[in-house]
Amino acid sequence: MAQRAVWLISHEPGTPLCGVVKFSRRYPTVEKRAKVFNGASYVPVPEDGPFLKALLFELRLLDDEKDFLESRDSCSHINKTSIYGLRVGSEELWPVVAFLKNGMIYACVPLVEQTLSPRPPLISISGISQGFELLFGVQDFLSSGQKTDSELNTKLSQLSDLLLQTCPFGTLLDANLHNSLDSINFASVTHLQKQPAWRTGTYKGKPQVSISITEKVNSMQYDKQEIADTWQVVGVVTCKCDLEGSMPNVTISLSLPTNGSPLQDILVHPCVTSLDSAILTSSSIDAMDDSAFSGPYKFPLTPPLESFNLCYYTSQVPVPPILGFYQVKEEEVQLKITVNLKLHESVKNSFEFCEAHIPFYNRGPITHVEYKASFGQLEVFREKSLLVWIIGQKFPKSMEISLSGTVTFGAKNHEKQSFDQICIGGTAYLKLHFRILDYTLTGCYVDQHSVQVFASGKPKISTHRKLISSDYYIWNSKAPAPVTYGSLLL
Image 1 (cartoon, helix red, strand yellow):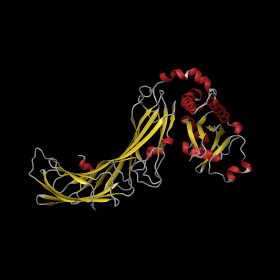
Image 2 (image 1 turned 30 degrees about the vertical axis):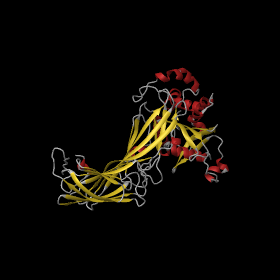
Image 3 (image 1 turned 60 degrees about the vertical axis):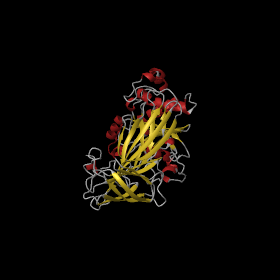
Image 4 (image 1 turned 180 degrees about the vertical axis):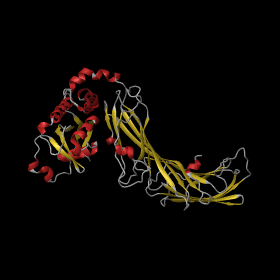
């Protein structure tokens, strides 16, 4: 007698999914036994998302499911037992014990210690009665004395530890969770619990959660047929969770718009307790296709006290945010430069700042500059042999700007002038520096309402995002040999 998985689902009509998984627990050892017992009829337990959708559909709790369906609603399928078969893809997960009480759906999947084809009589499956006993025990624990959402969240946060005592490895020992609560004296040992290495103390104060997404875009643009331009986005999600308790639980979800670029090469902080396998297997090495996982990316975690990087990721966006052309021609003691920049129409045209730095290495100081800029202004740093084109906070309506001119240099002073082993002769580059607030190139964002916090008190949740240029180079199209990104880092 054992359970393969247990769920608590809040039924929330009118929301996009009509429900939220408040708690779930899987038992991998029982799942291995199910695979052996069920043989060819074995159906794996799905992830929380597909299970939620299939269960609400079977219980007729989806807002858009009003039509009559023969397979579910005919008189021959009247359910009197609260035991269901859920369609998950092309397979059916059976048996699933589920019932709705006071807006909460209690569900579990009992272990059947034999083949499921043909279906055995319910009375022969001992795990079903045990499943009911477990769910009724959880219902009694949650409903006793509960008056506010914060009290419910506190009890939900205690469930994980209580089930370790009452239902270890999926086998029910005691359906009265209050007995276990009293025996381990949960309230007094909260501060004595063994804490993870990344949480070295406890927090006292106003609860709040801050989440920031920072994306850095790299680009190498050559304007050459023999070498392709490259670009890539590297993102980091930084969090600060000020929550009371020794081990508060938080679930943070990253979402993408319909046309967003899938996240790849995801690395997570050790405080993340579990992950969908599709998140870990998404790699930039593999060719992109329409089946690439595009979220939502859920991260359940026990956060440390200090600010931490929840995850890192990369993404291959369709186009770079700013397309550029840079050309340098040497004419006696002068250099003639031409720069064209174009902001892609899909990018937010609102910068905190935007500048183009044009250095001239291995030459003397700048003695004279003549230029014409269609937009912005040019600053000259003579001793540094550097031009800075200050574009400002917006591109014009045409989204295109240009700069042209001639630069004259004085005699070299080897002690003061900048030297570079790459930028020799006609090899030269322009580097863009910009920052856009409240925007990411992938479209990645965190919906405040999707953040789940299982801790005392209702926290204030704030989210931020920004796009920053990192190694964003536009190389002289007249250079004798293209410079690769790898050679720049040497």
